[in-house]
Length: 285
Image (cartoon, rainbow, N blue to C red; front, side, top):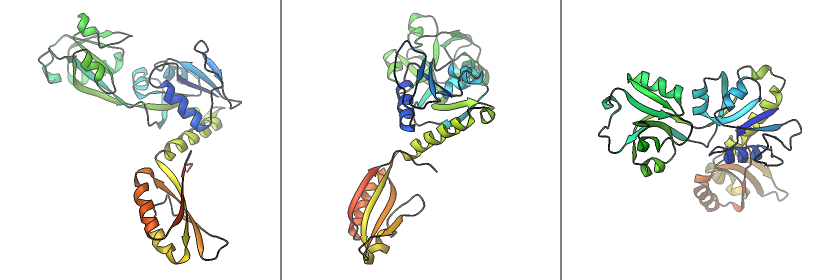
């Protein structure tokens, strides 16, 4: 099975971290290498430009890919988005120079030049807004283009807005939200790699489901069990086991990290002892 991942940019390291958490470790990182072996004997990683990954997956060059939702939409590739990931969140925005006395898309002058590497998304956007605009296709940094006089506005990805402000730009509209996503071809379920794809998807979902959760173990005297259980959250229900001492129970449950201090305090107040909190790597449903 081939897994296509970004060869650079803001999505690369989080993607590598995700694969490692799912159990796939790239055996070597060489900037010159495009195909890398992993600790899974039948899995190799393909390093590619994130904007190319949808096409690579669509044509079968890779069985599965991780890239941005914006690149999937821009490409128009016939792929399925299997898992929305919890990193790479950003917005694709229309931005104009601060000095341009415009605060609404409808006030933009006809014939405005918009610089972007997202040609298809921008074209659909200006058509939906009824704008008459010229799209200036670029491949590099968009923020500097209005300053150079080569365009009047840009459509580009924004994470915090700092870069836009540094270049004297202001956001006029949000074109779309984007995020990292796992993709496969439309007929992946019938491919020879379907079992491996399904396993990897299961492991990735398990990693995501485990984030923000802790495994909590405690000992509870028999006469305090009901009260302690009444304050414990769980995925289904806490697991309880009678210890060799007949008057003590071991209680195991899963708690969201933000609720952990409150749960520990209440459990101790109701008689729980010897509390142990453990990180969870994966939750496979």
